[in-house]
Image (cartoon, rainbow, N blue to C red; front, top):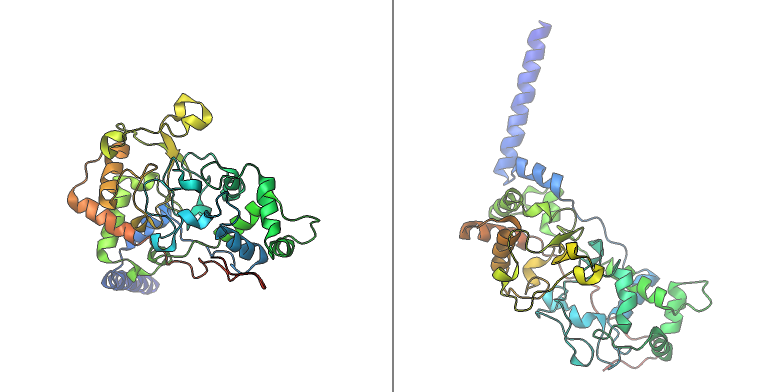
Length: 345
């Protein structure tokens, strides 16, 4: 009698499991795909508040052009809202029209990455922020003392630094400039439909996007583009299988991290970029040598994995990458001028 009850219960549980699986499939979910995705990727955690004193100061500094050598360049110059935090150029223009040596990635997910810059020559977004005002191509100031003098000459900044860094005798410093900008940039990542999928919303991805996710994992793209940022956590040689410029058409191959470390083992090594927002941030690669995402997908499969993708596979992966686009943050804009400060022209 007891055995019969146990068998009946097991049959009931099995039937319930089949029913749940059938419901999930009917709702558009691929249970195995979601399980595989959760092993490789992670949903975006909540971003810090954008209303802290440090983040608000960082927001002002991000859109401030008066501290550059020519009065025209701010951090936002190369990171436009209509370009999803990038600028749409192969290589960006900095102070006095000087050309940057590499493409400007989106700022929206820079905080998720383990290093800053393509070659990883900045340890963090704070380190990058500290050094940009004295960069010859970026802001063009001769030293940071010049930057501090400019900040103190603008009504409101001394008080804003004091509010953001209370208790410091003279808070307008290079270190605090970096901390404030870092605090702001860490508020910029926003959840996408892919995050909703990872959190269990089966309908967050279309069938075509789910097919692309499956192909992305099976082909091997997720070997490097994984984790929360779908990349941004490691270095890799660009051109594992063959020289990258044969596929990208780059006329002047960049030696990558080798120019930083002076180590031949780092020849053509770059930071693996995060793929968040990638559908909106072309042209692609460190030199902006490829204009369209499907071609970039094809190039990566070829030179990194030795895979010749079919048009169908490229279209599927490209569809999935579109689900990584975040909304432009509501606070990605300049704050109103300080009280009693004339509006910037």
